[in-house]
Length: 362
Image (tube, rainbow, N blue to C red; front, side, top):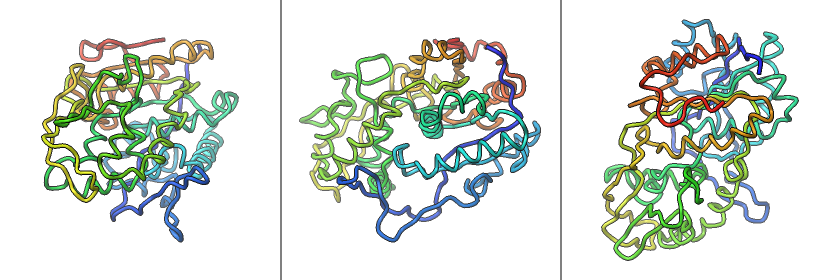
């Protein structure tokens, strides 16, 4: 395929509220995620970086390479509480922003997406026609994606991260729908979690990725089951179709990353009671501290579909790189590789520190 060179950069990442986020609920009749009556949430100054908390750390390093905010570098923050199934208004705005950037510079746009961003951007690309993607998108760069979920999300809904913040984090997790979107994905492949893989252990039960209904019941929250299942059946991550554009996936490895939690007590069937903190067992295939390698590698299944479309699928791994660190210069080789790819359309050769399992699939 011909090289895709981009003069326009668009970063999509979550917008973090300063206050407690408004609770969301699942409307079973209309099969949709809705806010409480009378509540409307919107992103401040969409297309700029005002919607990113502490945005200077994000755009200043890119200015050194010629990408200037609101000139050829645009911010597209999204409501982090929602899975792609609840982001249709956002996707409409994102399409308009990409088209604006394209028309302003007569140049294809690169989507730069860290952490939760790749899943949201993938949902966007699924909604665009192939003709539109061929015209407007140079690269989709997915940094530290959570394609198959992360076991840490289960800890948040059960007990929170630690004894001090546990009740706060647990309540926060239960008030959003992006958290179950990132539950470990059930499946029998190398990048999903199988029937025989315990994720949560208590004295009397083992819970796998196939047991979320039972887990919600045992936590005293059976009313959440329809909403959790709605989110898990969202086709963007369930069916996991290829993005249909030139794609680079970067991820870190060789950092201890939780995959299994051993709770000392059975759950109380009372959402107001927070279980004691679990003993954590790390994944054998490591990860970036938050996301295991198997989740990041799920995108390798796209190789054949990408090839049919004449689109590249590149994978690069970086030893001891923490989650989403590629986004900033502290990411070292990863940050430099991404900048080079956007500027030239080619990826520098891998080094000894970026040759873990899969590199360039296409």
